[in-house]
Image 1 (cartoon, rainbow, N blue to C red):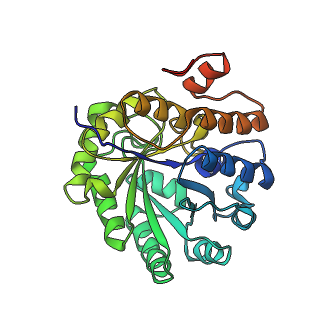
Image 2 (spheres, rainbow, N blue to C red; image 1 turned 120 degrees about the horizontal axis):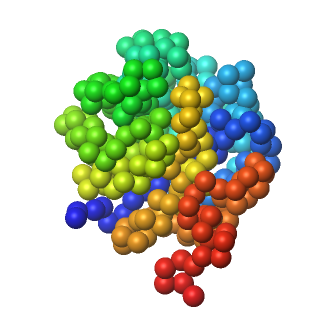
Length: 306
């Protein structure tokens, strides 16, 4: 089995994880969470979103989050922006790295951002161009790469087209999202193979939700192709407001445990990571969705640890 020697984990908890929560999380708690994640060794953290708070109220304090960050050397703190207005707000708040998001499914694109896939790409082009001109790094997301709540199966070719467009605009990395978590390993592998025909695997990331318990298996299948960037959320936070029943992102604790067990370096301290997950789930009034975190809370030991 050929695996990358090292995997970079992009932590989604403070943004994708919290944006679908019913409980309002104060800015101070978000800042403590982000700092705890950085302390655990995570070097890429998405800290918020400049979407309208009318649509995503949990992201209303993102400017305050950016202002209050205890920035650590070597850690990238990114934010999601939907349009030029959001980008300008992000830049005014001090953002240095931003992300734009599209979908491989026409129906999901219309439900999520009220336009076709082609129209969404037209909207993103000036956003990416403006960000790059200002010296920011830009990441691109593609939603519904392995299934859509409205259309069902999504063709790999549809994913490839959107990924190629985002890469062509100048996105340094394209994250492939199984938004509703219906993918299985062979489908995930074939999808990545289709995209990698035109976008090098070095510029691809995996963003898999765990609705049907397949996320770790899907990740492993794609790591074998050379993908070495994985999006995840501490404690398995998240969901999707446009996909009924969709579970959260694959838990960062579970990803790190799997990679540690295979000898793949992440630079993340699993015990400190679990502590960060406990911090936010206590605030939310529930336990973590991560199986590894639950085992540790119950007194379980890490392999090789006394």
